[in-house]
Structures are given as structure tokens and as C-alpha cells.
Length: 168
Image 1 (cartoon, rainbow, N blue to C red):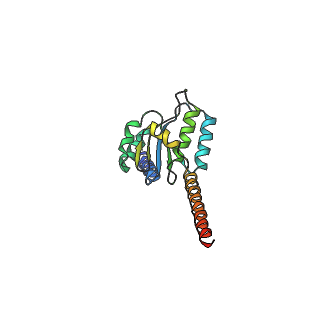
Image 2 (image 1 turned 90 degrees about the vertical axis):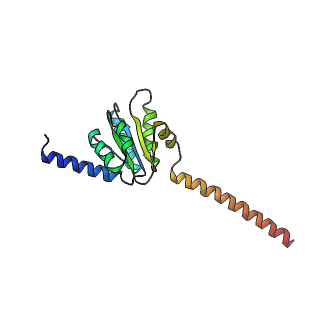
Image 3 (image 1 turned 135 degrees about the vertical axis):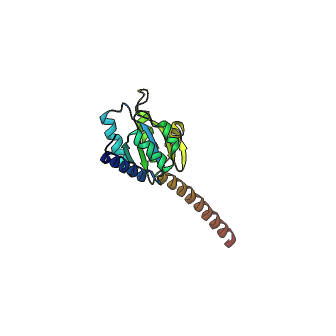
């Protein structure tokens, strides 16, 4: 039987991870088996730069976390090696980075997404792949702003032409 100290440590781990996952914009479980040190270091660096928290957790601990915060659909995926990518703000960044490394290591049967929870919806690996191809929020905002700017400029030219014709 585990000691009281070990049980308290495990309870604290469940609480800490639960707090990280609550209210997250994106959570993705990854099978990281076989990734080498240089790729893992580059992955972690890219995650940090994008504001994504990336960590490894024991499946038994994650089971309790998932039960405590209502992510029961994750439980069947808690087999083998499991790492977690979490973003509080950007729902696409974890998927984009994970997919980048999945593609990079393709054919080697290593490093692949298991399941995700993105903007309040569960996502399987195929859906994660599609989401990863979406442009970032900043790019989307810039594209919309550029489109609106073009429309406004066209409207201004049309109004100017009407005004010129009426004054002539």
C-alpha cells in the first residue's frame, strides 16, 4: 500500500494538471514514442515560443485528471506513451506544431496525435490534421482586414465617381 506522502504527491499532481487543462482552448494527447532528443528539444522550444505548454504525464494520473474535469473521452487513449500539449489562448497552435512533427517523422510510426479537445469539441487525429492546416488567428484577422479594406476602397471610389458626375 502506498504511503500517505506518495498519495498526497499524486493528488497534488492531479490537481496541478487539472488546473492546467481547465478552460484550455486546446488540449492534444500525443503518442511520443520513439522521438529522438534533438527533435524533442526542437518541439519543446517551438511549443514554448507559441505559448503552448507541453509535458509528459503518467496515464494513471491522467485518468484521474480526465475524470475530475469531464474529459472522459480521453480515457481510452491513455495507453502507451502520452504527452500533452495545452494552450489557453490559441486553439490552433498545438495542432499545427504537433502535425509538423508528425509529418516530419512520418513513416517511422512515431510521434502522432491520439485525441484532442479543441474549442470545446473532441477531435480525432484526422480532424487535428485538418485543424493544423488552418492559418493562425493573426493571419485570419489580417486576411479579413485586407478584404474589408479593399471593399471600403472600392466603395470610396464609387462614391467619388458619383460625386464627380453630379458636379459636372
